[in-house]
Length: 314
Ligand code: VAH
Image 1 (tube, rainbow, N blue to C red):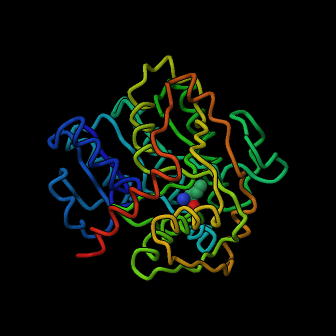
Image 2: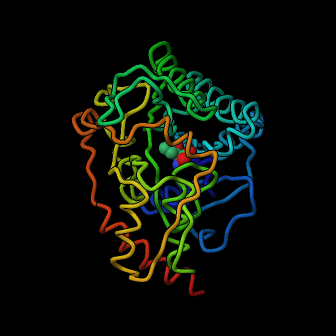
């Protein structure tokens, strides 16, 4: 049985649907804080769960015989800057509690998302490698770096099978992104379809690693179904996807929506973006468990706009 925490989030929403498709509705339990959104309820059981309530999470896991937890509940980079102490508590303590449960044999496998936000100043901008000095300068990046080290500690010391991916910015249309720095690349599509224009909070030439959600979900499943001995990186795997800047994304959108216009008004998230790499070397994930991608910027833009035209027409 599988539990997805943060199942109402950008990744959680789609991961839940994919896990139901793979393992059946009766084996997937989705949890989140808000009222369950319509249209996903048939995807599986949903129950409200505050992951910072460890007794509630433990009871949920025992009551439903959960053996694998995809732990996605967390605050993203923008929100974390505004609430550092809460972000640190929420982004770390539930993960530790789940590692403890795995150490006790209550659960057997954990997925936990890290981020390219763990990289910071002093690194090359391009093609950042798997084993480099992590030097995050954001609350979110610091919390993700600490989380990676805890994952490695519980694996090395107790054999806990916790697996992790350093996601780049993720782009999707099923559920909105929440409080991230790369969210401009999601909002731009909604605004392009609804209003034909967008004001970007990231400068036109700021290149960041990005990935379409379909590829992110497929990579997550590939990692989680790989033989344990193939998962050699026990901090978190680099996943680079594709790299582009707002100007390049706007140009791609204009090929589909000719009169689309964009302007740039950088906000506090520009400094966060400036501290991150522009591109990532994910060759280790390709070697260890066969990471691959289906979507480039053109195919992603076409898919986003096609689906948003339907979603926003309702
Ligand atoms: C954020 N979407 O912007 C997340 C992600 C690499 C970016 O971690 O905070």
